[in-house]
Length: 157
Image 1 (tube, rainbow, N blue to C red):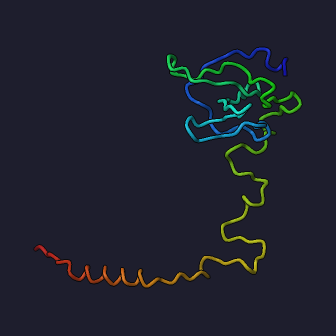
Image 2: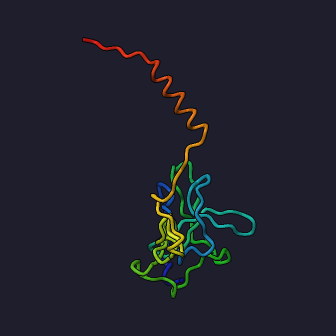
Image 3: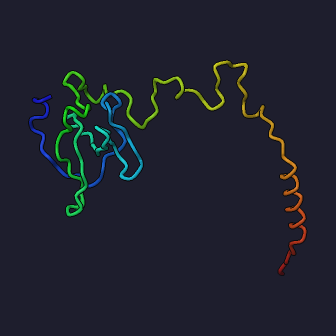
C-alpha cells in the first residue's frame, strides 16, 4: 500500500461523497443517513467520519472546516482502525462488483418480484386477491353519496 499511496496529499471537498463504494472495500465502514450523511467507522467506542478515495483506493479521515466551508480530507485512516485495502485487493473499476447502496444483481432476492414465491402453486397473482370493503367503508360511501345529493347544482346560461 505504501507505494500506491506515496503521492497522497490532504485536500478539500465541497460535500461528502455518495453511497457508491464497492462492497469489497467497505471493511468496517458503513453508511449512515443520520446527521452528516456519509460513511463512518467505529473504533474504540468512538465514531469517525471517513471518505473513500477512488484514486488511491484508501479510506481517508474527514472533518468539516467551517472557515473554509468545506470538508478537509486530512489523511489516510490508520491501520489499527481496520479499513486498510491491500495492493492485492485493488482491482480495475470494471471488476469492482456490487456497489454499496445498490441492489446486488447476484442476489436471488433482488430478482424476485413482490408476488413471487419459491413454490409457484402458492403464488397469488394480483387479480386473485379479493379485498372486501368493511362496514365502515360501506357507511362512508353511503354518507358521501347522501352529501353529494345535497350539493346544489347551478347552471348558468
